[in-house]
Length: 430
Ligand code: EPZ
Image (cartoon, rainbow, N blue to C red; front, side):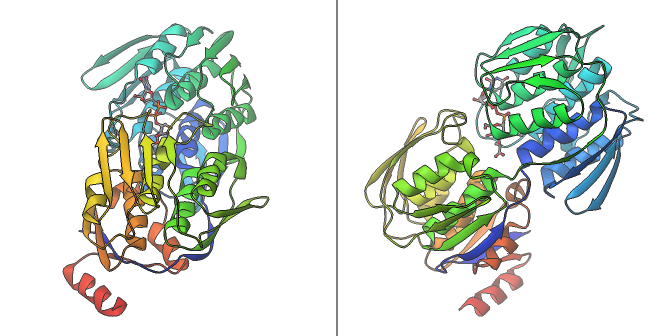
């Protein structure tokens, strides 16, 4: 079984190149189904979730060619099925984007119900509400979501909650509907804007992405395009917090600093120095960290996907901090693992009350989900002694070469397969 072996204590120092955003890449890949022409995508992250989606798309007839690790050429001119029920797709949340894309193009789609990280109840009612507002009939049968329409027509959708997935999905389907669709209370995340920009580059007519009202004027057809996915702000934020907790000096490169404003603000609050340049951010952590309070919120608020990483930093910060999770109710599962490393955290409902401790100590821990997994790795990098992190398949869903990038910053981390590998690692790292 693969796990990470980590010897903590080294400050992370150096530059790290940030890849394309997983949560933008997934809907962009799905949206390529909406044109028969060839689409070229750059800055595509090579992670488990995108690869699962690409393989499902290949299986319904989409031509997929990776021209290098981060460039992919797709042609969906010969799609041969509107039904996607592959087993691995059940494990990723983004399978639902195939629904919006295939429904938009072919007015009929059947896709397995989405899975994804177990971080709380993950409803899809707003997706369904949106498709119905465009004139589709939607049902859930035998584990598939089925959506069908004679014709999609523009509609007015008010989202009852701010949902990234539902906003993108309805925006995609509306692109090829007749007339105007208005999506109110839409999500404003950078990846929503990126998908809108991508669709517009294929000939769509979408206005207002990045605000809470998106207007989509349906077009007859979309055409091929070339597009580069935006940088992953969560990957970048994870390395920024890794610098903070290891007392390091890390520059994240190829980022859009604007997308990281909430992360930067919190790092400043807890006592780090942060320097923003055009497309990079440098984080220097040279003083003791200090406590603060955080509430996760839809963009531009502090992202739920950074909640475990900031908690790892606050648990090493002087004083008492409070972290409130408002997006997913089950996103503190990693706290037990962090406690095994010496953290003092009490979770009450969706709030964590954190009494900062001086240090973590190495332990054997498991990743309960993607972001919590990366946060636990960061904790182990700051800990005294050696740790192992199991269930790293979760981390590999969304971080490309995570351990190699950390190694390049001076971390002592290795991917080990056997007890023998682990003993070798321990001998080597002392
Ligand atoms: C996306 O999930 C991301 N996943 C998540 O990233 C991220 O945590 C989340 O957005 C919030 O930013 C992908 O992009 C593949 P939502 P999504 O719809 O679309 C409720 C990661 O680690 N809701 O914005 O599933 C829902 O229960 C992952 O990369 C409804 O009630 O999130 C939640 O409380 C984890 N009904 C809130 O809205 C719906 O129909 C936000 O969910 C849809 C959502």
